[in-house]
Image 1 (tube, helix red, strand yellow):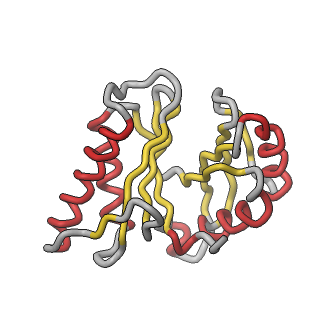
Image 2 (cartoon, helix red, strand yellow):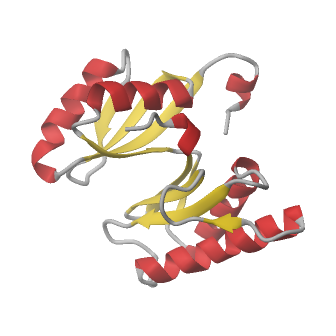
Length: 181
């Protein structure tokens, strides 16, 4: 998925949610992000080991840099494409919209949610993943006229929700953006 600036060949401002590999390495994660990403703003989110990063560039290049330079300290990196209130209907709407834009007719996909803090989701994580994943499935089937391909392990596209208390960051990671380990 590209921003309008990227489609015109210009990098844009990217926001990421980055988690440390574990709570003990959080300070190293922050330091390695600051060192690897020139002029990036790395801020605490209020959750230990979870950082909000703002940086100029292209998503693919930023992810490659983080993976190459910070890989040992990083748990997850999620490009933030939408920020919404932590409510199930808002999440379903945002996830479906991003999925329609990012998932091709022959690509595999899955939906993942990572919850933290006090939020508005009353459903357990597996229930939400099935419900939102099902809504994405239905939207893609309607769009393409055929059932989409779901792959829970190593899909071509992962739609991710990072719940940060009362707000949720929703993004997409394409397997093609990540180098093979």
